[in-house]
Image (cartoon, protein in one colour):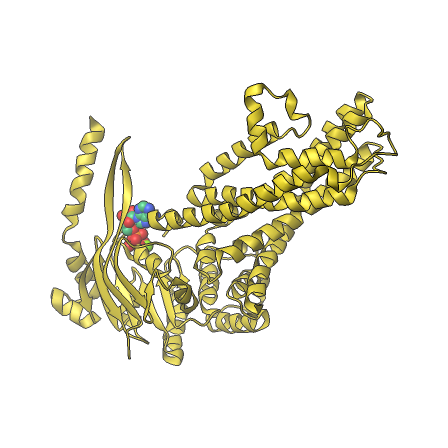
Length: 274
Length: 271
Ligand SMILES: Nc1ncnc2c1ncn2[C@@H]1O[C@H](COP(=O)(O)OP(=O)(O)OP(=O)(O)O)[C@@H](O)[C@H]1O
Ligand SMILES: [Mg+2]
């Protein structure tokens, strides 16, 4: 048990010190996330449409959280591969479950920080008043969604084990597709008919739909300063789907990672030099 | 029952090589390699570039899966008992792979935690090792990227030893080091073996190093173990005055065999 805690801590320790040394990059990324989110939210402000603004703000926040979680997990393996330390991590007597849990926990922490930065920034750019929104419900939905996104992240993380460059390409393509089909800034109904089935496959679709209901979007009684956030019971369908997706994607992610690791060891793909 | 520290039997490993669009061929990195290393022995694995030394060490380190053959480390067979094996091996590779932005201390503590060790103890041990390797304490908090290759390689050795493994796999640990650093590392390895009885598998291109450190030496050429014995025995076998000459004589043969397919390829490319 003590060993397990130390091993999990190893990844936090590493993440913390890397963040410290790359702090300027961390600031740049957070700045960029903030600015893109604010730009999107200001479209709603310009249109003087509170519902639209709120839709964009919810979309920006959720997307920041989900994409950064997914990305951080994928990138941490790519980074190890790139530094050549992945061989040493794979050599250590640490189970893949602990390794990936450690990475995921640190990524989750990072994503929360980045989302908070964006939230604070958005509060400065728009006169957002969330009174009446069911924020605790939003947290529950995010908590449940996290499991599914970690699963997707783990699959993405397996790609750089095969090839750092190809892995990064595939990660971005997948992330872009998810942004398109999940209806981050618009209802999925506006997508072309042939794309709509895909949106049903993305966990983000359900996260967003649930969060919108919970902050009171789509409820005609909602007015600025007095939103009519739905109770958690109103998003049960989304919660159940998200929980099921998590229950499938998380083990699937671990399995895919394991398979690719085995393949890499057979074909000699872990090697960097020497 | 007494068993050897390293037991390698008919080990085979091939890599797929792409030749053109559809054609793929197999490149044999290791063909039927067998040898044993006794507990507390230092065994040198010498061979020309591309002879399969690193592939062999990767297989022993659980980073590469063999195509066939048997490997037992301290009696535990790979890949079945890799979880156990990982607790008893330390590896140093020719390229010191680290988080280059992190300090030596951070890198070593990360490793210690990864092996489930108490950070305080691990740090103390790492400091001791680095001192024995002739490194100043002040360097401990310098980022790796600001260190010379020699220093990085010393940290790499300290990393392998943080867990106090009974088995050390060293892939060209002194390549690229200046004579003084090289001697530091060699003396350290000698002392370590005498003090703790650590078994060491060492690859090197430095014949003097092999003669100094290794009780026995195996010559690897084109994935085959072509000769094995003490440095003296190898010299006698090759009727050579120096280990250098013995190396060239014993590993030089069969070179044409490997070159042939390449020539064929050259012709194909020309077409
Ligand atoms: N991961 C890999 N993928 C494909 N081929 C590989 C891989 N690793 C090694 N090889 C090939 O296997 C052969 C043996 O390589 P290896 O690195 O084991 O040699 P080596 O004896 O360590 O050489 P050197 O002295 O240059 O370090 C070489 O022909 C090499 O090209
Ligand atoms: Mg090598």
